[in-house]
Length: 134
Image (cartoon, rainbow, N blue to C red):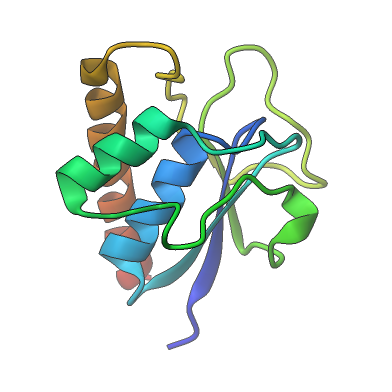
């Protein structure tokens, strides 16, 4: 099976897209390759996301080598998913295949992070199922 490359995109590649990359690798690496990127970068990924992902899944995004990167830093994607932009989604050189429309939990309570993480988990599993059935 030739695995699709899925890119999870948000502006800063520091929180939601990083969570999606980590969960994609954790839950669906047998079906697709997961990458994340942004149109801008941050000096580090969101520490609340790192902490909560470690607590919920035992995934250490930093130890696993995840960092904020630009779209040009990842392989060309077969599927590009916008995590949801509160203003305007970045242009990445092509149309997005999907927009998950998720609110950024940065600066909010842990419950907001957990809600977003669980939503991403559901969508990763749904995408996995969709690709398996193609």
